[in-house]
Image (tube, rainbow, N blue to C red; front, top):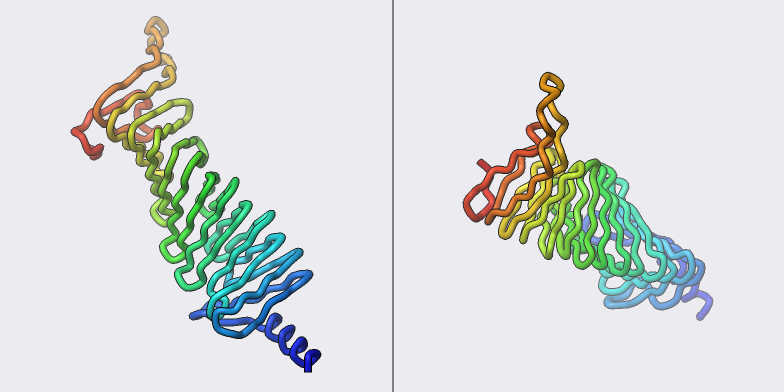
Length: 249
């Protein structure tokens, strides 16, 4: 009887379970717990891999719990990717809710958005697959082409390529540095909107070739309640003051 139960357990583990429209499958060197029961738990140890639709998660240890394995918790060398949405990640720990499709990464968390050529890291990252929105907390760094950002917190909307930074944010764009209470960045156009107490320094512009006698402009510092900075395609030294609220002209 015990042998029969063991065989059934293995068959259940090898079979995909469905939560809404996304199936789940998993494998590991060792497995323990129960399968197919409400509010049960299955523990995967050693080379653990869980696949939910196009999302693949691997780690040293993965726990599946809740009805139809709603909750996935991974620990130790956690890595994974979503081939459909075009992002990959790594962290010390991960928790994932299959119903809400929200993943939380903790401990040296890194997220790479291959579709938008964005690399980001933070102590904690939460990602919503349905809205394609990522929220970064503590020690945030984000890079894309000529844009480099640092902040305490950041909200990244992948579909719109919009980044909202707070917590002593700093943005470097092609050598120009900007600081403010809050910074909004359009990663596609490289428009930067500064809000609150603003400061920044712009690199020297090359002197026009038609006037060799004209001196190069020194680095500029800007201090204003809020400001909008134009894209690099326009004058890199143009700073437009705006009323509080940081609205673009």
